[in-house]
Image (cartoon, rainbow, N blue to C red):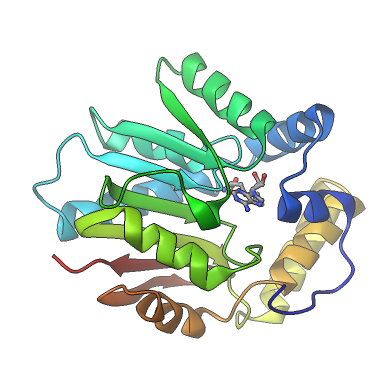
Length: 234
Ligand SMILES: C[S@@+](CC[C@H](N)C(=O)[O-])C[C@H]1O[C@@H](n2cnc3c(N)ncnc32)[C@H](O)[C@@H]1O
């Protein structure tokens, strides 16, 4: 591990190791589903808008969701990218089953890729767009993860990273923590706090991308969560 984090609850631990039981994974998926319209959907819209600016000619791209879980973000992005080939990576078979199920329910096809994000079983330069949400902070080897994202991207390929921002306002995070506690449960609020506390400062993310080989990296959003775009050289 790159650094120590505060003692984590079961679900946070499980997200980190990727060792999900069927029951816990389905519980996570159901719990997060309610959040999709506030979180993954606007995030997908922002990514699609950015792609239309930085990759205007992109048609039917190959899109890889790294550590996809049930592919929430990938499936929200899909309607913005007609004809896209959708690949979902995770180290947990049950998460990929959920991703495939959720895709089918939407009339889409997701190709599961069971392997560690730090050792993607994909050819060099075989992907146009990589998305990775809420995994950078969990990766046992963030540099290797970013290097793998870089390796699989083709010329002008783009990586979008979304995660909690370790340098965001603690006050804002406490407000959200209180809201989750009131609207959901103490347990979920605790999980949110532990995840938030584990996020890297957003200012450290672009240099990490450049160290992994990306030509440039830009912060597109910096709030409690960040969105960073990293671009491979053409
Ligand atoms: C916090 S969840 C995020 C899921 C999804 N990206 C989202 O935002 O909803 C972290 C995911 O990383 C997966 N994971 C953990 N270790 C992994 C690894 N080494 N390689 C690939 N996926 C991993 C877990 O199984 C889990 O699905």
